[in-house]
Amino acid sequence: SIKPPPQENTTNIFSATMRTNFLIEYVGLACILLLVQYTNKADAFSPMPKNGQLINGRTVSPLDASVASPMTEEETTTEVEFPPPLSKVDRLTRAATFWSSAVPIILSYYGKMAEIKVREQVLGDEVTEEELQQIWDSQHEAGAAKLADAITSLKGFYVKTAQIIASRADLFPQQYTEALSGFTDNLDPMPGDLAKAVVTKELLNRNEKFEDVFVEFDEIPLGAASVGQVHRAVLSEKYGGPREVAVKVQRPSIESKLLGDIANLKALSKPFQGSDTLPLDYYTVFSELEKQLADEFNFVAEAVAMDRVYGTLSRSMDGTAPAEIPLVIPRPVPGLVSRRVLVMDYLHGVPLSRARDEMIKKGVDPNGPEAQLFGRKLLRALTDVFGRCILETGFFHADPHPGNIFVLEDGQIGLIDFGQVKQISGRNRETLAKVMIALDERNKDEENKMLREEEVGNLALELGVELKEDAKDEAAAAVGIWLFDGKVEDLPGGYDKGELSPNSPVKELKSFPQDLVLVGRASILIKGLSSRLGVPWSLAEEWAPIARKVLEGTQTTRKEERVRFRDVVGTLKQWGKGRTTRAVQKLPAPLRTRAAGVILRLQKKSEEGSNE
Image (cartoon, rainbow, N blue to C red; front, side, top):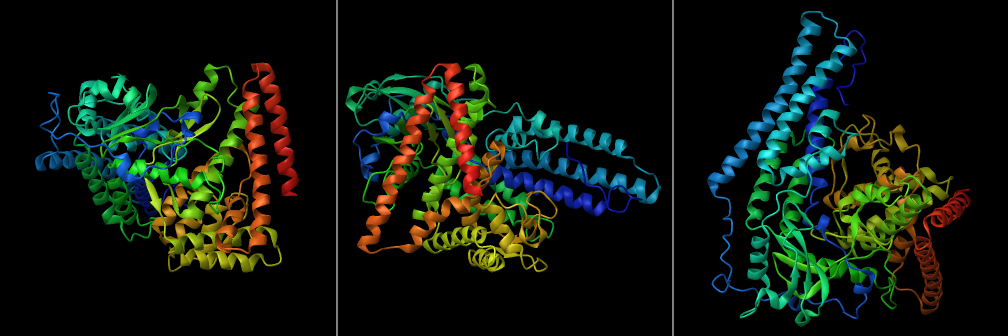
């Protein structure tokens, strides 16, 4: 478990100042993890499209063709009562509950630190390591119990706090992760008749019955979360059926509740704005993500985002040829999309967060060759998809996490939940491309290494990174390398690679541009995956070829032909690898494991050769 760090002076085991800074940073880190990684909502359980369903001759549908004509309230035949929006009194009561729970927990840590300080400095007692461990274990148990009670009472947005803390045993005390591990996304689903009433009100046309659209509709949802829930259904012939689909339904009046919760967290972070003890301006981050969240209540925008990302990845960079997408992306059903209901392709699979349990059920060793081979395939797919989206168009999925990545029954990978996307400016997109190229050349040009690092630092500042006044000259370059090059062992300026290390370059940040905050989510996910697989991975090296194409722009006809031929060869190689992987998965279990082991050894040998 985590406890306050020891003071350098051995006569005092813990410095009061360091303990206070630790607590403030602890609270700030909890908040930033909550909102930067937020939005693991209903789509985290949305089924994904089957591969065959994606290639059905349907082009990207325009917005007006995708939106259904909703019925008016008077035309709705259901007699289900819809929950009303939160009143002003409700919002005040909810805020008061939050503050009455959060503030005492925080103050109790300050009180405990003051108590230890009095014992050490006033009474002259020597507090042993063992005694301190007992004190903080007891403090963590009490705080975790209070926090769990508060979240149980409030639910809504605060459930995300519990889920994120419970998943980060590397950052939070064991008492907190254990006390909050019981909170899952599949919580308090709204009744099936209420979900059907929302669908009826949002999607059905005049004189249309529910059965005219869906011949089957499972009233028990596949998963339920803060914003909504997802149901399996089968479309009628009138709407292209029989066809299995997933129906995402928004909870009535949820928008005002969740936005009010975010306002509370903004208020919590406001006093720390400009604090020297925090690595980032969390209040600014919360404000930006509040804007992002507003779009997540609009399922029409989510449907458009799905089609837009699919359109980017399904074509070559110059737009002249089709391209094979390395993962499956859901597609909305034309005519069955509204602001609060989204009908999309259904896919059989499990989220990555539950893949380990599923492997064990099927008798697959989670640490064996098959799992490692899939992990490498996932690493490559995510790298390629985010590299193209971020650098080529600047429009990308802004909420990648294990709940939004699906492992499909046929061994393919799915990326879901496009409720949070980001469009970065053309200028920032080009600057990011220059960063990738500079980092790539830094690794290949030892003689000009320092020059390249200086270039990376200047580009980071151009992107809007602001450093503290006393930061080292190498801080900006170290931040860029830390974020995009996992192969580097020694950062410029002697900084540490660990993000929570006191000597991390992240500690030198005064302000971080919002475009990079969301790009960083993808970067950190991929870095974490490569670390778990034990595969040295540099996003800069992998994205540099894309970056060069982005900056090169229009080329001569002859050069375009050479590039196109090379791209075709590369595509055929990737296609071949995909075919080989799928063929292996169809083998009997013993042969499958042996074949996967052979392929894995060949891949490792190839990587070792390329790194020499």
